[in-house]
Image (cartoon, rainbow, N blue to C red; front, side, top):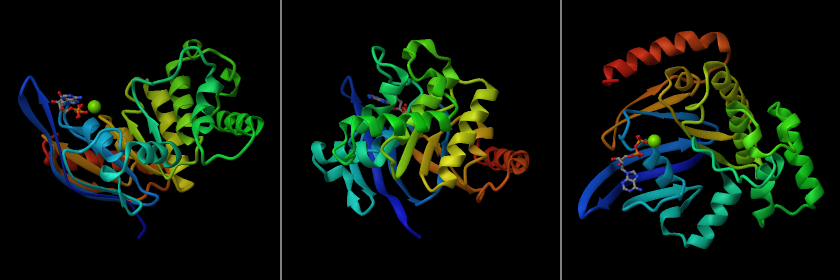
Length: 255
Ligand SMILES: Nc1ncnc2c1ncn2[C@@H]1O[C@H](COP(=O)(O)OP(=O)(O)O)[C@@H](O)[C@H]1O
Ligand SMILES: [Mg+2]
């Protein structure tokens, strides 16, 4: 199988007021191409730190993060920022959109910054509109980012994360601020992207969200406490049963 991410003995230590906080302790795992994988675990267990460390947003204290064959923890900031821009998509709960730009302009911003994308602005705009149509938010294209709902904003974030056609999308609690319906819709979209081949790694507290992923990693206190392989989710009718099975397994792991 094609490995996208290979994480070896990853450690992350923060030092705050001269006190050492070992947040990640020798974490090892791999992510294969086309996987949709969820990270679960108690608050403060290191889920966000893990996502930041493996996506090159934050430097690990030690260990290796091999992304498509190269150790990103050893790359220069310049090379790394191009990899983040061209090959990774990011969806965060505190959605970092720029307030003085329209929704569409926010979505196409990474394409305008990328050296990989060789197209006219018109073509970029058309791709942005196409993504917005796909996610059902085209009517908000010219709105200010403050004029749309939470669900629309989250879908706009998905569009933006997709604009440079990334190898992998990292999402930190992508449905954390949404109600059930909006959350289900956002997950429908992420599942579609995944079915089309995009690898997705997301953090969630929501068993229903995790049950749609092929694999769940459970983190406690900076260690992978356990893992559960749910396999591919082929139909929405399976979600209930998957949720029940995942709940049982999480309970065993101390959820
Ligand atoms: N930038 C930072 N500086 C110092 N400590 C941090 C920083 N980010 C996270 N931490 C600490 O790391 C631990 C794990 O945080 P985090 O990864 O955000 O947990 P989770 O996402 O699982 O809730 C917490 O104790 C938190 O206080
Ligand atoms: Mg977090």
